[in-house]
Length: 314
Image (cartoon, rainbow, N blue to C red; front, top):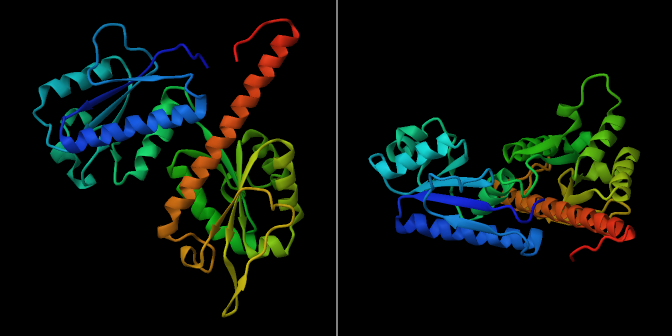
């Protein structure tokens, strides 16, 4: 990571009060995430106009935002044409109903897959999933493995697979990701080495069976500094009764998100009212793991250089 490289975000907008409020929130979130990831060592400059000269670098990202009709705004259209000529990443952000896309945005943006900003929580998603990865400040390919017990956790695992894939995660789930005829456990272990993070669904059968495969996956993750998030459930259903849930042995110190009984179905699939909470926790834990790995890497390089008498900056 070149800390001296210039990183820029360009905000092309209609200047409406609603739009400006969103822009300020995005700037604030960018600064917060950079502070957490790099402790202030990397800065991003914000701009409202794209220059024609060579100042624009590959580390630039462009956001187009509008809450009013900008069909006839020739200045904005010229700016978009300049973005295209420089082959820069452009994210069009909708501050209105998705069905109104063509009623608000100019025709030049029709080929773009615009992002529908529906609430404040999605601002973090814009920053973490688009802006920072496109600038090379975080990994574009966010990798995660889902560990579960098929007998009662398949539907929940499948649900998470699709939800995370929509959020641009690279997800390994044996049912979808492993080819027929493969040694699944070898493939899981190989993928764990390649992943920064594992999600374990702590369903009743997963705990009661004490599956040696799940034990191996958790132990392998701990030994190889792979992050783990356990999604647990307040109660388990047995017949018509709800029983207090239990923890998988040996996982007491691992990060755990406990879902309440009104946040999941009997088959452990997550209800809509809780899905955003779950995905936000996965984002947070995944970022923390990558941050820890990055710090460990730089610390290791620093110690190695110091062994050869090279002074480093701390």
